[in-house]
Length: 190
Image (cartoon, rainbow, N blue to C red; front, side):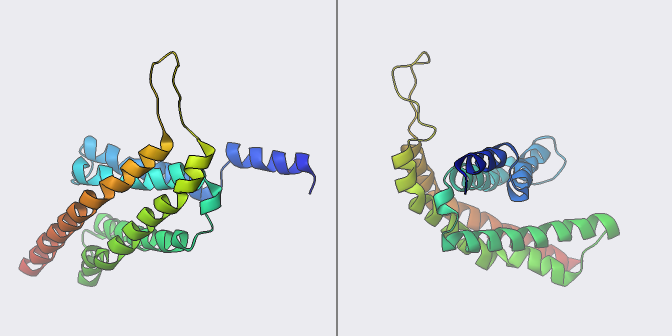
């Protein structure tokens, strides 16, 4: 293929990303909805979930195309997709009809038992496997000296992100277990 065509195609993707990338820009809306009180979800539980999705989508998968073919991308997308299909269809039914069937409530608050571990494992694995690419490229790194007198190393930021998963994942899983218990107990009372 002609080099100028390849370069223009690459530039086109940078300026006009495929639908998945454009759709992922809406990942941050639940944080805003929590802040303004549109939903009951606390920002403290929404922020880590959305933050990790944004980081994985843009900071890893968009920034390092070499990692996009890894098998963990498949498990990541499947975990995220099933979770969101169940979640949004559940809330859509509650909005449209004032209720959701009990089987849908059970799915909403039970599928995370499997999908959280597969999603989190995929996220951690993709960050880990992207480390050599992050280090080699030095993408987004800011070296000293500069006018801000500030430095940033994306490789160490990725390691920090990995470190946050270890205490954060059990915390989020326990939070969801509590949500599940409350939601299923409430449905039994009704």
